[in-house]
Amino acid sequence: MQIVAKVIEFEISRRDLERECAKLNLPDNQQSLMQALERLIDRCLLLSQANQLGIEISDEEYDAALLELIEEDEPFGLKGSDLQVLTAQELEILLRRRLTIKKYVQVLCPDSLPLTTDKLREFYNENKEFFVKPQQVHCAHILIRGLGVSAKQKAETIRSEIKNERDFADYCMECSECPSSSDCGDLGWFERGKMLPEIDKIVFSLQLGEISQPFTSQYGYHILMLLDKREPEYVPFEEIKDSLYARLQQIEKEYLLSKHVSELRSKFAQAIVIFREVLEQA
Image 1 (cartoon, rainbow, N blue to C red):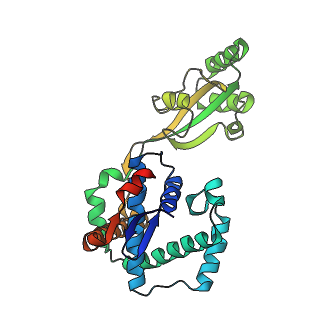
Image 2 (tube, one colour):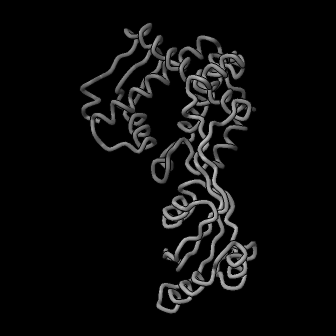
Image 3 (tube, rainbow, N blue to C red):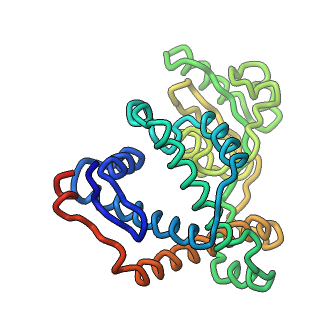
């Protein structure tokens, strides 16, 4: 087995490297190999520290994780032949290492990192532009299916007869071929990108109460009436506080982990040996 690198007490084989590249779906070139190798080196550094702390995985923890792994669509991020060539011993090593690193990271970055309400509010105020509800519209809809002459004539005739909201509701219930016809064509509230592009283009240009001229999409002829509009607005702090707390917790953990790995790389720089000649053959 060709060894491409050593990290403290761990060896990284060419097979490990190929497996990591397959997991990351990287192209077959030296840059990809180095990217995969960097990730493996980081993992070995974390494993070494976990060993120093005496972190172990019990048989019960392993068995439970193995059952979960079996349910995954792509265990270890591998698929097809890359997964099938794994031996039982390799699978156990990979799974135990994954669990060990996870346990160590939980020790390093606990779930209860201190984040006060004042700190959350400060972050919210400094980044308020990211917490905006987009413009939304509420409209009603008539659909005449088909793109032929008869569909066009029908849509134009209906539009010519509609003078107000009551007319719109009557023709909608009588003629519309959209499922929304049972609710007077009500499409509810939505923002840009949630409906067909053709609908977006028209409805966001209408004034309140305005009824569009017939226009087409792949489904046929549409007529829209704008019922209401909400302009963009900031999401209130109280409404977003809980999700913001969870997100900042995750950001803080990622920062602590990245900083820790960087410190380990500096501390153990002399214990990280890469065999360049073997790597270039990989």
